Length: 402
Image 1 (cartoon, rainbow, N blue to C red):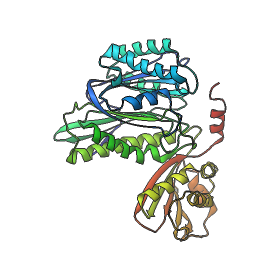
Image 2: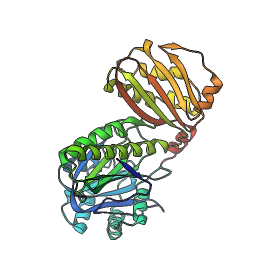
Image 3: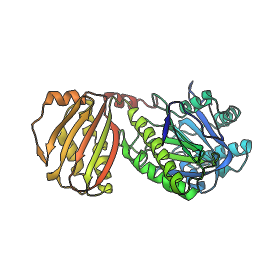
Image 4: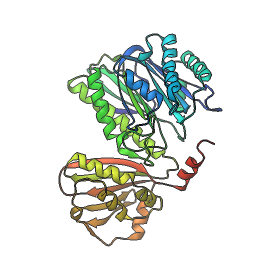
């Protein structure tokens, strides 16, 4: 049984800190995650061809054991040329010099404005401060969750745990992201720690599967960032081997739970967002086509705008399905809108049906709304999450650098 803890709890053996290095005027802007024993690790990255320097560095060292992750916000260190890559490497080297190990045992992550060189004097000072503040305290846990944010309005973090062979295993995750979020990783940084013992091959496989059903099934604005990364560190401190059998199944479920909860938190906090939209596609010919359809619907700006106006404009949903290139028969589609205010059907077997516009409006005015698409062709199922597209989104991104 997986338990979701209301209070964030660090897995055994991990220390964290969050500090103000000066990359932002006043807010915390540098974080450090560290394990006192080497970890197996896994990671996934943006599919954008333009990759930030930390992503390029991390991709080059991802097969080695890891001790920690150094993170800065306020500057993405993206499109910064050869010097940007050297700066990313130097961040890892600074951690290794102070904490032990080699530079390739430290992941580096950055988020913020693109195209601006890092101020390495501030970075070096911030790393020293972050190392000195490492602890398991609630204050530093909160500081990490805060220090990684950019345009986010609130922190995103969750702990899931389970008991196996009378031992407690914890999976704890932090994430950031509010804009530039789209399937194929988003402007998201996510950092997952666990005291499970698991081999790197199994961990990478489970991470890839979890990302595919969580971070790759959300969309805020259709933009895929240069810095998207998801990291998982497993130090084995619980002494529970999760590489095989029931323990592996429990761990996979806990990891899935953490990543999906973080993904939903991200779209709830989408820039300017007022509504969480969930799309559930059932009865597709297979899971692959169900995912393509769900992602196409949740990524449509016209669909997002309709939800902002609480307009039951179901034709936009069918249109987004049509250009998705997924396999489905439009003449078999049933379509519903759902929320706490009830449920209403707008399409049956591909034919429009009369519905109460006032009731539909009432349903769509809720803060959390669901689109249910029944394809009546097979067993494929998929869920995707997104948010509405508002005036505030344009305002935020119109003066992002200001």
